[in-house]
Amino acid sequence: MILYRNARIFTAAEPAWAESMVVDDGRLLFVGDDAAAAAHAPGADAVDLGGAFVLPGFIDAHTHLVPFGESLGHVDLMGTQNLDEIAARVTAAAAADPDASRTMGRNWLATSIPGRIPDRHMIDEWESERPVYLDAFDSHSMWVNTAALRELGIDDETPDPIGGRIARDPETGVATGMLYETASLQLATEFLTSTVTDDDRDRALRLAFSRYLASGVTAAVDMALRQADLECLERQLDRGKGTLPMRIAAHWFVDLCDTEAENLAQVRRAAELAERLDGPWLRVTGIKVMVDGVIDSCTAAMKAPYADGSHCGPIWSLEALGPVVAAADAAGLQVAMHAIGDEASDIALSAIEHAHAVNGPRARRHRIEHLETVTPENIRRLAGLGVVASMQPVHADPALAENWVAMLGDERAERGMPWPEITSAGGVLAFGTDAPTAPHAPLPNMYVATTRCSALVPGLGPNIPEYALPLAEALAHGTKDAAFACRWDELTGQLVAGKAADFVVLDRNPFTGEEAELLTTNVTSTVVAGRTASVELG
Image (tube, helix red, strand yellow):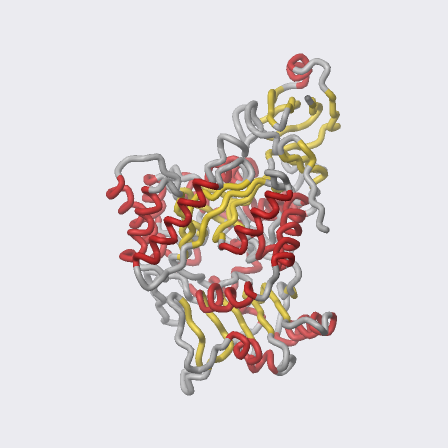
């Protein structure tokens, strides 16, 4: 038994503040004032925290663990201002690893190439022999060179995959080197996955765990789990003799197939996994569906056209989506639907209403991911249906907003990511990061949430400042509400008696300093199930 005393503890519960915690066998036995805690645990080993700030461990409500770990070995193009800077970083990485089979990059922004559409010939000028794959910052499009297209087996006659597009010259029909949505997320990604060994994947997962724990994250929702990543998590679970360094809930990814039978077979697979994997360290809790794309590449499904006149439809129609959501709902699975455009969220909510009608009253906790644009009417529908809004403050960072705003080009950009409207309507709002599409650290995420200012480029003006949140609310969305979002609210997310001793100690109190101090605050200790957490990278 351990008594943690003399701290400033934010509980994310009522009462909101405490001074001491008593921990035994990985659980909180008591949370309250110093005197009562000492009386509650006579003879316990005492740890004086010296007035340090303590809060529940952060829960990343939406991430991609193995891809995040893998991305840490890729060339980071965030912050590049032009094509020359992109070329310099890519060529430097290639020179540093001359034996690599291919060069991987991430995080380039459309604003780095103003007035031009990326194509393979641009990359060919710096690297024509070795395949180069550059993921956009949102991971929904990929820019490749000619060698990569050749390696992928993509030529001018290759058909577009369902829900995706291989960009082609409008006059000649020649593939340009840009892959959108499933052309990137499935066609290219499935090939690249086949080139990675289990050992590579295991190292990536350990690295992801290490980075998360160092930043104060004690649990995460692995969104869009596939077979290779599942096997990786299970290998780590075996090595840990039934435990992981942090708690993982996962959503099985459902691809859009040619037939309803193929779609429903994937739901049955998720249900089988959910029955087998339902522990306190690893559980499959539902399915993930990509209803649409992203605004930055004009692939999000919007009710009105984009500024350039284009009007992209959804990846999943309501007719295809309805049976999948109803089947998952009947199986007791959570349904998480990527829906960024206002039309996509309308489709997602209609599919959930269909499931209610088909299956009748039952306990539900479905989710919509991202919700970057959503109408006031659909916010009311979301709250009325008890659907969780799973959102990522970092996506509202002003450093990422220029192209986003330009693609919409009208008043829709003035209501981007309207967090207070969702909570005012009675909806539950859960925060995550969507790593590796964005930085994984939660404290900078909280800075964006509380200021709508940039954690990436200091000094930028705020992005829709009226949507900023009080710090206590933002922290609750990243802890208590994130636990609710993945059905772990009985286990973690708050510092109250009976729940897991998952908590974080910071080197300063974010409630007493300037908001910008969230960007320089450090995690001094991350505790999971009562033990200081660490990962052997090996």
